[in-house]
Length: 206
Image (cartoon, rainbow, N blue to C red; front, side):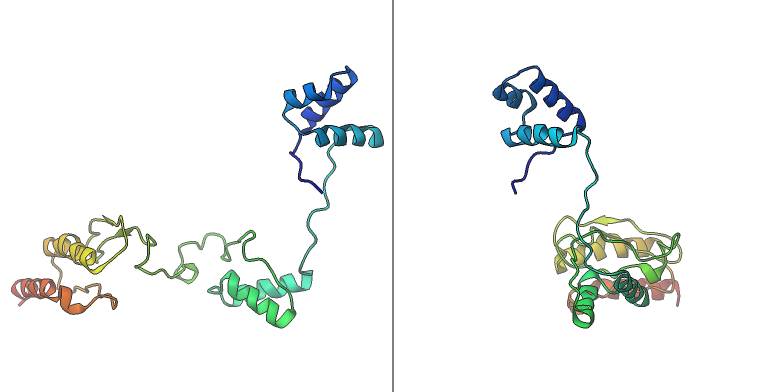
């Protein structure tokens, strides 16, 4: 079955009027920008049904039953960290049902609980643009936000610590300071900067 261009109800009525007026097929095709088979189908269905209304389609058949839908919802609620791939593998293994992971996705959280930590997805600070900003936060204030334009590497991490995090910490010195240590980067690469900052803390808070 060929895939035809969708025609609205107004277009179908205009095509039928053009046919009744005795217009040529070529003229109708050029005017409405539709295929020859589309014009033939519109006229054929009008003769069969005596109208050109658009009837609702049956749609795609369900893959899962109502019972399997309840099982899928229960599994998602029991472990909110499961993604579509894991749920699909579980349904295929235990119930021999293969679901698509590319269809509509629904957020599994109650209304008004968007910012609760329980419903937040863990992210990784590395990767090609996964985290676009970086900043420092402490109990007294919020530091400047640094925009990351490229892939995060140790040189960029050093610059962020030097010009954003430590600079803000020196202006708002507090006795409790927790540096952000990333296991992907060597601690010795940025340790001299933090050693200087710890000396400042000792002078202010002997």
